[in-house]
Length: 206
Image (cartoon, rainbow, N blue to C red; front, side, top):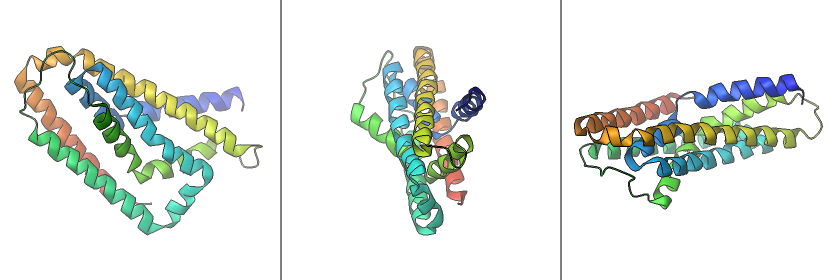
């Protein structure tokens, strides 16, 4: 790959990753609720949730998902249901007190939630299916390996950016939690955001 191709890919990938979405929202929420260490763990989980979509795009399974309306709909509505569950749980817990300092981190829970959030989003598979080939022209030798490399770089960027978001949120945690009314409003905002993301996903089509 040429330097121009790498530059174009890195700039495009950076813009996509920096743009707020489900994963970054979850990482920030985790940082505020449980601290920086939990936020980094959430970033790891969200990145792991991206990898199956990258694999599907590289191996061609994304074409099958694109062709099968039933498979796309099943995965999509599972994702919608999960986002709504998070929205309801966040809303119900908006008035629960949190202790100052680093909160207790449930590793299995954070990993499970972060991975599931991205895993149940079929648009990620179709996105990578359309995005990666733009930087690997048809007929390129070892095209699958090059797409896998680009996917790995994208995943690394995802982890770095999400970690930065989460650690920044964790750094502000003490100041935020000293204001209970603000905590309640932030939790309500996160709950509303998860609900909005669920609505957006429900309206997505192939």
